[in-house]
Length: 182
Image: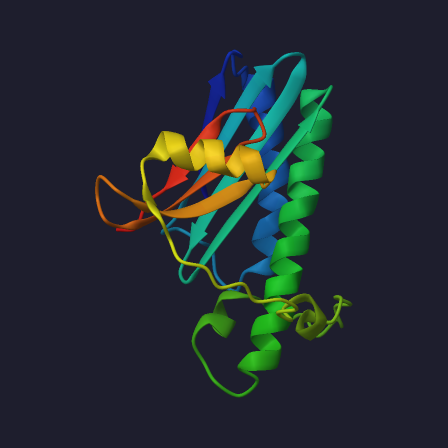
């Protein structure tokens, strides 16, 4: 894998870069062949004394992403790699169940014949409630106000400027994000 390690509000030292690459190289054992087509993006940042690590690994048909914040950068790196390993194992189990005899994305992951214990995905993916409502045309600012008024972390609305369905959401840093349709 190729690594793009960058820092926000932090100088990325050679020791830190080497540690990130060493830890992320552990993930390569889960893949059938070396992944040369993707560039793993690692962002290290420090905000209000918290050391954050964000890793994105684009793969054919799968996007692996994890983020972790701790008081120590090395602990954040360790925890984010653990999260990515869990994601890979869970996805591998799901793919193997779904495509038991088919080729395709299944060939992306090694078949190490060791059973992987994952919570039952069918329970995790069950829709337990459906809501229907009419989308009122409004601007982004009004949608944020509506979201805050109902106490949700996201709000879907019809954008009056673009006539498209958009979603505003509250980010972990306290700011807001907007998801637009392409």
